[in-house]
Length: 567
Image (cartoon, rainbow, N blue to C red; front, top):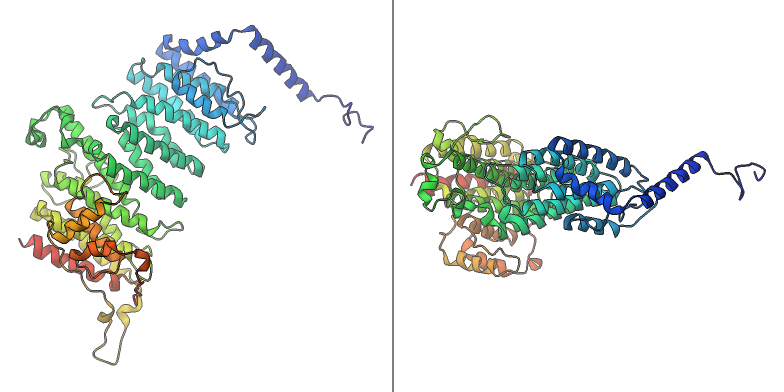
């Protein structure tokens, strides 16, 4: 082997090595000949380009960036610090983050991506919104593509750049009737939807969403739709860690930023002080009507985000039962908001045919009743799906927790707020929601509880059924008030007071967790007990819907009729 000319210490360089050496020497010569300040000026001067020229400039810069990214994906980032020190703050921060990630000759290069961040920063606030929308669409697609790269440092660099640009964009309030926030934040959703994205990247996106909500919730308008879609996707993520983080973000949103979600409480969106004037759609301008419809659509998206954490069918990656139970508490909070007129229904556009379109409601109602049910339908349908869920949800020998929790939540909402529904709406709720859910749950129960026979006339399958829950106490019951005080004293408790339905659900779940008898007047005593000391109560048929859930569901019907419908 030592005789071969290409081997050993004195081997000749290959053609590829020669070519690369020439390119490196040329690059050094050009860098020495060109003033770096002039390179910076190429990108800072993009503010003077025409709109068409700007489109071409961005397109070519993206092409160069894609070529640079295609380095050795197993090596660290290179050329991270090649950009000038005159970066704007957002781009400068992204550069610093990347430089800490490591370097590597021949690795993916992010010089042009850094410059793309600079160009976005320079042009963000000076371009007409429509022109900027097209520019950002090109840039955002590029960032979304890079965010799904296998190389963790490259993809995280792209997410960091997106995060900082998004923070700067959200500093400027969005004008009414515009959706630029939705367009700007879309790359985050694209990455979450991409099945090839990395787990750590999806987790990073959720943390970015959490930070943006904490810092910029007062300026978020159309961006809520993107955030709710991201949280909805996190519920079905293969990673339990991401699902848990998604619900934690949603919970913090409800606990700390509910006022930003329900701006109709102050009615500032409409520039009027009279609450009744806002509720009267005939006195509203066309812009106010569109804004009212958009607010209702955002609220529906929030409801869907919470309901996505309720396990309704078997899965290879089942959600922890605790996440589903916490999401059920959210629905009671939403019901309280609707009944208190903190969220108002849309003023037009109701339709019963397309579940994915705005204004989805029930058939068989007048126009006004149908519009009112637009807000209620995602809550009621989601709870109905939980009632007849086919997913196993047993813990500590107690079965069908999600199914029973859904019934308990539906019962609390109907008992506390059933008076807001008209006779026609009650009819629809029974015929299209509750009764079909009960029927499906019973029909899908394959447990042997219904076929038990005994020679003794004193023994039947009914002996294995749970008892229906007793009627709950009134909203001002002393025992419930003590439970509310105890719940609010917890360090993790929300700063807002619990609504009437939400309080009833929280107390009911505490009773269920601690094996109580359903008497919620004593729920505060159960909440004080150490859960670790609770003895598990084995049920004969914990996975039987008929044995565990049917009595509670039928009791819900009788309670609703006796306490609400007949009155």
